[in-house]
Length: 376
Image (tube, rainbow, N blue to C red):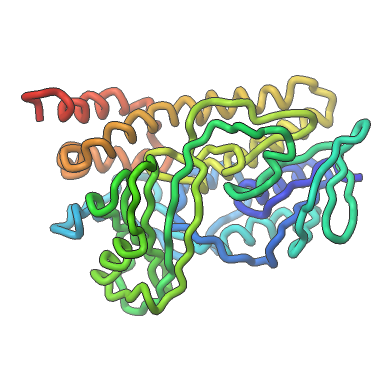
């Protein structure tokens, strides 16, 4: 019997496995895909995550950037130099996610890929995890199987607080391409934006909508944007996927089990940043289960409260900004993007040097001027 079975080998699952193995706990990661597996994602990562791990992420980073370029409907760019201590990482998720899993394996964690979990059952003092091949036993579970996973439902989280966003992404190979900046375009898509995150060998181009409501042809909009970088959407494979955006605090623990990563609906509702909160909740989940295995009966409850305090409190501000920004995008672009000071602060947020709560009051005040007759 394992101390913990983790379902899902993404950032949350990998982080949980690493930190559990580091404490000497027996951990098993189950992943339905064959590793390393492709994951559609822009792949921008805050360098602050390095503080949570004692191994060097450099081998898993495709390149780093110190510039962000913003456009309104592919118009004149606004380029901002990031004034952060460390540049933003650009990663390929198949390489990045698998690298974390490999570090966990070095510490003793077990990993079984191409393994589909078909059901779970609590029996007496343990979880039975059913796969197509066998039934496994564990004292604790971590559900880290993402937006489309079944674990949360099986654990009884049938009505999670979440706002579902949607994204369409392509990975386009390129040579002699611009690798200096991450690109964001606003105005072409309602309640979201288009992005182009460069990698050493190409571009990750995506389009996302985060508030919902409008019917939009994301494929058509994304294809037009991609042309500005010489990319033909019709020649590259397209990946559509849902996004579990944060939509309020909620319980993330139940009987000997917790939710982590996108299963816990922790994606930033403004920027759709998901890798950092996934790594963060995976780490916290591992620490909570280590405490629980040591006899702390409040450990899992404390996990929920810590996520709410350390991440949810900031996401409440992010959600408020998103609600205003995407409601009045043209005005918001002028006051929130075209002002270098505002974009530098956004870069600090993305790098983890500043929190939403530190700057949100002034941001909301500036944005709400556009909602008041005669202002802005």
